[in-house]
Length: 135
Image 1 (cartoon, rainbow, N blue to C red):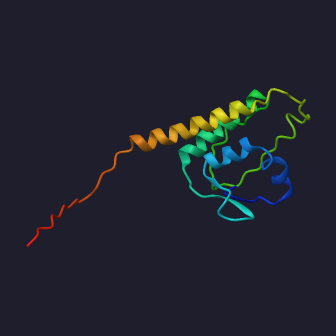
Image 2: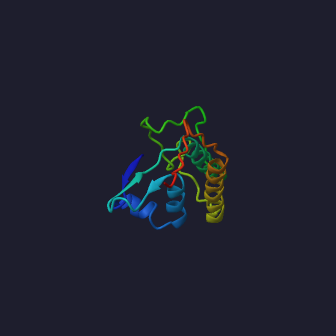
Image 3: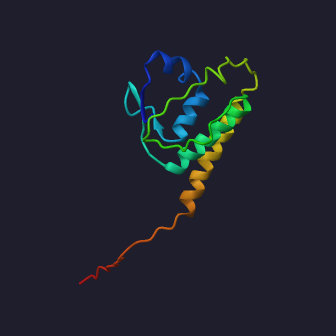
């Protein structure tokens, strides 16, 4: 999704109460402040989205979930996913969720973004320098 209604019951119950979930979405480019009723993907950075997807998949695997690795992520393609069933069975509750691990993954993504920005070469084209002479 590139936009979702932050006032919906599902979003209010599953995302908004969890600061680490909100922080994760902000780290990958979602803006919670631009619109009072919607959360929008303010900046599209394919590499960041792939890293975020990888972090989420790692977390799902750590909880005992399975990922269909044959599907290539495409933010413009509609997909349906569910965490309710695993091979037709309701998963057993797992108490291994660790918000600090999620925060570490968010921090890792932010650090990678900063490292990429710092290493980016700025190339100016057709630079002209003018010197003002006093009469």
